[in-house]
Length: 276
Image (cartoon, rainbow, N blue to C red; front, side):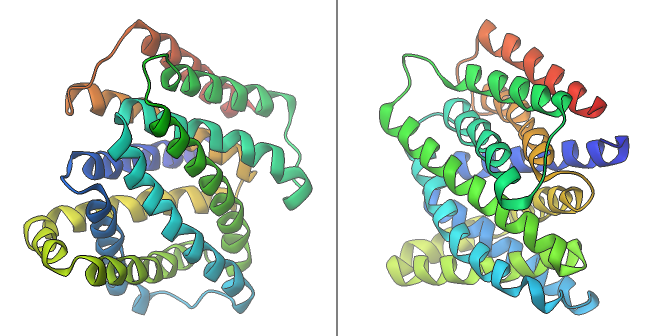
């Protein structure tokens, strides 16, 4: 994997962990997820007039992604209500790349080198070491694993859509522009008084989180047009290291020696992907 592609994916990983921390730190997790999606839509609205339209071939993939992302946001909120970010985030992100790697060959026609498979395995193994422990909430684990399947599905959808679009940047901004309104509208109809209060109190944070969300996924989708989807999906999940650091230093969740070992595995996996 070229160095510049790797660095952009890693920076996107930091942005992804940051907006997830915003969701976890808020009061109503579903409201926070909706605010992030809405903030991303507002930021995208200012960008799309200056971008070319994505190719018509990507439209079915764009629609499918919008639908599956609604479920993704709901499951993110449910996972963070049920358990710590230090457990649920690694589990969500750590198992999804395995699903993507296994499905990318039959669905996308991509084959990974031996080094790429080793890198994917190291990253996923390190992430799962962070997530799996006997004190974890069963409900949190179930929600996180369900969302891992959703993440794998939208990764494959968007990897294909971005390639067909002819312009990955345009695809990302149109995706985030159209992703936000359905979730925001549902939350408004479901609990207008409290959601309006959340907007008033957290509008600035929502815009920051939305911008982080766009940058995070934008870098990843662009990278998927340059190298195999499965390797990007695995490398992107180094965001878990950032998420664990945030969960310990900012959210004051418990840490441990296991997380150091897991971090070493993830870094080793990223280095292996660089050589793939």
